[in-house]
Length: 263
Image (cartoon, rainbow, N blue to C red; front, side):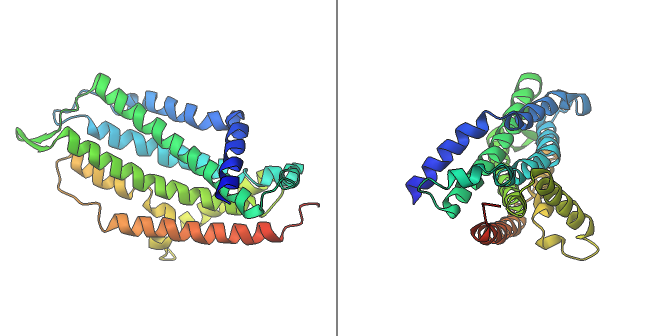
């Protein structure tokens, strides 16, 4: 089974890497990072320009990037349901759940790509135009550059977990309809509605996107020389992302298994 999933992933990767929508996200993320110094000038902070990184990466990744993840993931299955491609693909010796797994992996790869572009771009800009010698306060080194790098890696990994939950969210709606525009509308619209109502309904701690900026708050605090910890927020965010992914992908599998691909 694993071999079939990996083969399907390789084929899906080749197919989607040639599509324009795959390039839109990384290119736009790169442009946002390049424009970020206009809103957050580099080289002006004595304690280092880690604040620029704390501003740029979540700004690019959790606003535009997250929406792109939803749009991209919501089109992975629905597009091929609509044009009949999925039925032809399943004529090969591969099960529906295996193909769905391959598509989820494609969505996860896309989210990881966006995170890498935002991260590498922000750090490159800070290294070239800023000061990354550590965070100081009153002449005393509070956090070294290596410690800030480690904190950044933790923040990105936690952020990626939430983005992967967004992939599961999008793929779930992608199995509901044969129209990609409808699937995208359902994925983005339902997310916006719940995000708007999560505080009045007191469900914010249970909604996965509530943790998009959780880790970045800790990283931003450290850029200001505060001693803060990723726990317990990291545990809550990871658990919510995992729970959302299991629920969404489980429902997607049930829907896809029961679908009549011929009509």
